[in-house]
Image 1: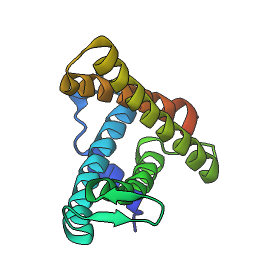
Image 2: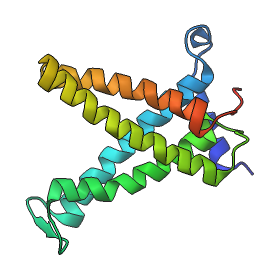
Image 3: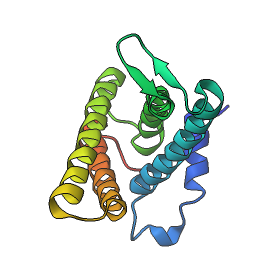
Length: 164
């Protein structure tokens, strides 16, 4: 019987065509595919939590701060997609890293925090300093963040993972 990780890996690899081999490594393809899956999962969970759990237009009183429904939904979705992203990266994109799970998780958390900070700083720079419109600035920021996240995963969070 196959493990869930090997089933997901085989499903992802089914989309990797031989013509891609010279252009995109299998590891980079798996990383991008898993990132896309996690992004889609994030959107579904956000929709469900925002529309059905919290309710549109509500303010959430946490006792020390009021949060709008969209922001509260964002905070509830983040841990879900954080751990699914970690699982996908650890078991599909960067398999067989010699680092222990706790070390990987701590490093992954640090790299995610770095990506959040990078997104914030790039948007501030591109929009407020350089004067780029927000939508193209967000696109450029997302591309930089994706490159940073891949490099952080490969050389820090899951360092030493073999490419197969």
